Image 1 (cartoon, rainbow, N blue to C red):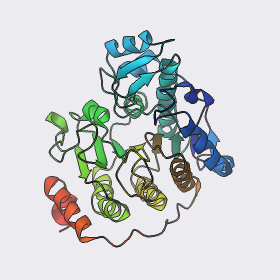
Image 2 (cartoon, one colour):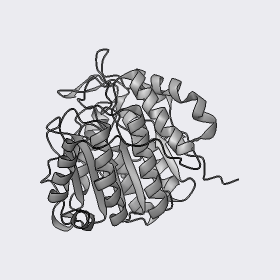
Image 3 (cartoon, rainbow, N blue to C red):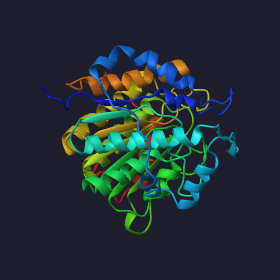
Length: 349
């Protein structure tokens, strides 16, 4: 039996001990909803215990002042910015989330499994080098990418962010680096206000940031065409050695924070198409980390749909994307023009 066939999965009751307040959308019940939805799939996954991030793993992405700030909130409740709160165990939980994302990424990079899903909270992709923001205390996906680079000899990494909000912290961590592709689909303009078409990296990393800002109201037709015409060709051209996904589910049609209309089946198709490309270009090395998603029922069913893609050994096709609309075609043509430095954008007309 191929022991790498089962995806790795990390979930832990301690992730629920970060509490931002009863009315806050990023609440412990998110993970309870996920646990209920994925229960039938658990025998087909291999669970990995959560573990805390070391200081070195945190400092590979964040500065020492931010680490000390995290230590300073231990045992206390308070507020770090307009919508980022902490409770007495939040610093401990953030360390646990970051370390667990790192651990899963390292195991996949070393060949222990072909894929993994870290079911964490709080989310992480807004956290910048020196500050927490947007519900996020530590940037788990950036920490995972850096650990893989430093400990496994993997250089070329693609980070795909399909959360409805732009992953500003992840972009800023890697925007000057040639060997990390950051590719984001997000509602724009929207919080945090970053992620415009003109943000394409700088210095050695110029061109390695591909932002696909999408107007509110986009759904499966727009996401499907963007995936088929931009996301997948970019991954094929970049040819990463591993792909990491900031898997937010707040672009779902039922999410109360976002303004998008992606269906549960749409998220499954995104996951399946990425997995098929990853199987082709980097021996299946794929790790996802949970970001947003705030309608409990929608969150549970979409996480289950994506996990179902990972546990399926054949990665069967998950239906077809809807026929693209004229608006979707115009949007993708705008992306092509903005990212014309890429070969696929120049030759696919």
